[in-house]
Length: 157
Image (cartoon, rainbow, N blue to C red):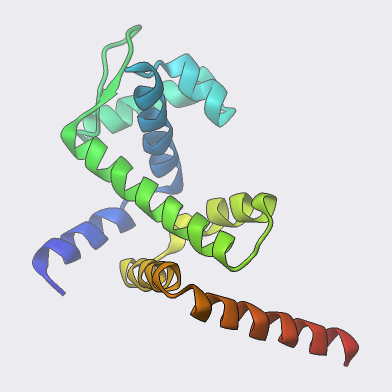
């Protein structure tokens, strides 16, 4: 594993689920509005403004956000890089789960539960699988047929 990947993996392990959720949501708001406010983040994450304000101060101290009290905030270059990684991970899992035929509700629930616990190696393999199935749809269909057959056999047993 390269030094860059090791550092990235170590940095990811040091981020809490809450940190990642906040960074992900801040980026979504910035993409939509050009900035994020504590009130917007709190409403979006269904948290109190004081809890979000405390997290935003911690994110600023760690160099992830540009924050001035009572003003909008934006992500730093480092914060944007982390948010981009989180978004790619989220998208990869969602696409994988959609490809294997899970319902939209299940996809959303499972991604939220699983996304913070994946190792970089696992994410790379899932990403490769998604790309493979996208470029080889017959292979995906063969998998889905096998999967359906297995489920039907287990129901009748």
